[in-house]
Length: 366
Image (cartoon, rainbow, N blue to C red; front, side):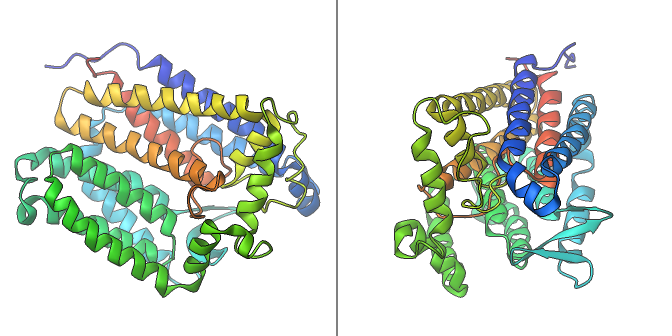
């Protein structure tokens, strides 16, 4: 019988709330000019982000007190609900389109993004499958294919929106979980080759994806078109220097970097707070990942371990991709920076995921 800890991981809570506080400050700083111009309210995005953060923190502390085995019990129901929402978002009149992607469902004055919640539901379901079938995972037919089939079905539905960024994070997270469960490297090599062919096909099937790749390789080839965001992001990071231009003193947020409060918020942070500020945020993420891995490794059962690894893997992949994009190391994908970027569904989902991780920490032996 596993005895529950009296307190969750305090370091994880402090780190998460610190990142959240930095995010709220930076959302206001990055969005004030744009919000004033568009809505005549410099606090428009900051107030909404504060609302999302409040809901997310309440959800985090509530879920922290819900036994993580509950997610195992409801995993099938949750993933079915998420699949239904992925279908619903594609129906005209229900789904909302933004920036070329029909990924949102309107709920009153707000909207939710089902693909974000599919990531957590898929982690919960896959953790259940892997914990019950770990001995079969070395078998391609009995272990690997059944687990990946559902993942790629969800990926295909997300790509119909289309949302390559969210789909990539989900698939990457699931592959990490399956690898940790003991899948054979030879199987991954074969699937990797198929994946590369499929990824190339996805890129070639949509001209804008080809442009994103070419702009990543040489953004100055089309500085006013596909390379514009990357160039403006680098123009923000460069002048930041060691200590930055000062909080609120960004130049790129004056209509140079499009919607800087979302995917490219790290560029504004680096411009205003410099190398020191950017490093501070990366250190916070490193602490969060360290605590998450320790919690997952110390979980009392396989389900807790796989669930924890999935959550921390999802956060790590998003951080790496987002900062990689902002610094020009990866093509633009439209992935938010956890806890910092503006966005209700993404922020709420991440805080809920941390809540699950905190509950595992109450049982974890580390």
